[in-house]
Length: 233
Ligand code: HEM
Image (cartoon, rainbow, N blue to C red; front, side):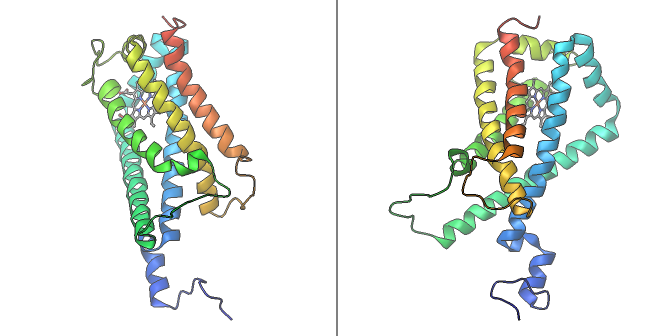
């Protein structure tokens, strides 16, 4: 016998939800999880590439030139990244909208029993991250925001000279703290949505989420901080 709420391919509404995942809450969460994983994989490779700044001008510039020399690879990666970001943000907006319809009047007093600050601020950190990415592309990809003169073919110069400016360092360090929080909760929530992690009464015991968040936050933050403190010249 089938229980209430169980997925049944013979029911037209369930078949439709399988074909169009954005029609069901679970489908939207799976889309968010899958695209979130793509974005985190990008971040891991982006971090590895940027850590080359510690090996000097030639190492970082050679890595950047390699990407530019392979336009099909670069544009394929950009297309996947952009599509993932659009789907991720779109699914989040749809879920938010559903939440509002499900509970048009807010709780008078909400005392969540088992949740964390990053979990409760996912929308805020997500919006800040989207804003940061726009700022970051205008700063280091197009050079539209140029606190120091932008050199199109000298990424090392743009990064190292850029991070000598205190307000730029402050923006990056602030945004990177939000990256860490967003990834910490997002990594765990993705594993839950994909059925890879069981509910736990201890929301802070999440080894995969901790490792990912600390590596990304610490690795990225070390770059502006070390440059600003004079550790890279
Ligand atoms: C200290 C931290 C970071 C540094 C030093 C850094 C460095 C760079 C540089 C140099 C570029 C331009 C590459 C080029 O035009 O050759 C770039 C592009 C980009 N970065 Fe970062 N990045 C950092 C953190 C982040 C974070 C946290 C995110 C996402 C949340 C991010 C997302 C992007 C994106 C989407 C692009 C555009 C990629 C493209 O043009 O195809 N970056 N970054």
